[in-house]
Length: 336
Length: 195
Image 1 (spheres, each protein chain N blue to C red):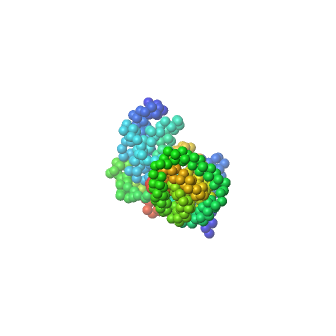
Image 2 (cartoon, rainbow over the protein chains, first blue to last red):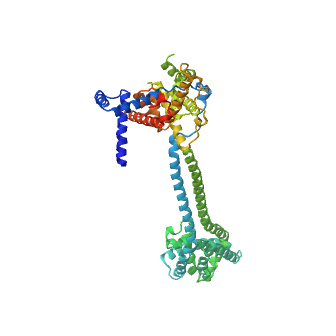
Image 3 (spheres, rainbow over the protein chains, first blue to last red):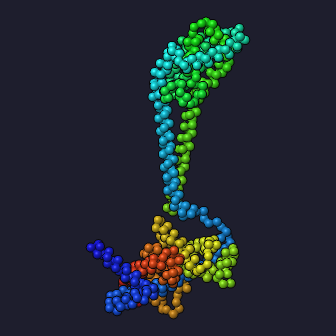
């Protein structure tokens, strides 16, 4: 039924098109002749043509509407900038593009936020326990079996000792015992200070090897402190000797080795201990400075990284907000 | 100065030359806008905007029919206005009875016709205008350009940027729909205007 009606309508439209073009003299001679033949034979078609002709005639006879006023232009009208409306095409594409941009930036924001929360959560809980066994096994191993690395470190320590002896010869008379406790205090302070950042368990695990060295010189202590910042890297990358293990503190990888290595070397002879102490006294200022410098650096790496996260999150969040507002504006402008 | 000279002068920035063209064509431009939009205020706005736009874009006019150039601009303006209305329907001025009447438009009085004839003609003009406003924008513009403005198929094709076949088809549909509308009015039409 519907198809029948549609068919009738379509036929009527075709007939109207023919009759309309006929009224305007737009038909070819052949088509016109055929239509005129049909008109002669079909009174209904003639009535339709007449109704159409009448309609056109009524529209053509409409009186012209007088203009309400002259539309002449003034210099001010043409000099005046057009209303500051964005072009139609701009209005059309701005809204979808802004919507897409908002979606992308919001997604990035969510990803960064989730990544930050996830990493900070893992850094505090999941990674710290993972680092524990490694450190536990590391210290005795390094203390008992001199690995190639340890040997290397021993060589380094020897060189350092040679330097220390030079300085000790000049400074051995100056209160040799004083710097050691001071440095120990420093060590304890930094060990305690690092605890919240690096994980309390790590500090407790890493500190014991140091007292094993009777000298308890500021050197291992000072070097030990950055080690506390190490566990996360150790836990992640699997070894202190790997270059990638400690991307943030540059002094960290050798430090771990040194911290373990001096223990056996410093242990045996009092002479060496004596050497170590003057060395400490000689290097007290630089050593303390190193503690001051290295430990805060170790601490700063995480806040700095987290600060970077915060800045990134802030920038992304604000951008997403700005884009969202611009998108709302663009859609409203488009609807206008 | 002839039309071509006025156009050249206007292209060189002479507003006074352009205003001479405005005076020649403002009746046609306004009538086209009025028949498409259906109310005097919108038609006046569209007309003024069209002339400003025509002047500001005159450097793009590369010859041909200046009337087509103007009617094309005003047609596009009316299209935009109709689209805007479709999104945000507003009350027409006609609804307030401010459409053309004798008092407001003394030019409409034909000195030879009797008062009742004039009234009938006015009624019929209202009905036809109402019928035109039932048409979709593209058919409406085509019908007005053809049967009110008297443009040829070719001129309409240029003004509305479509093919001759499309003009023919749109015009036939517009006329057919208007005929149906007028027939549906039946007894409401003055006897001498009934189809």
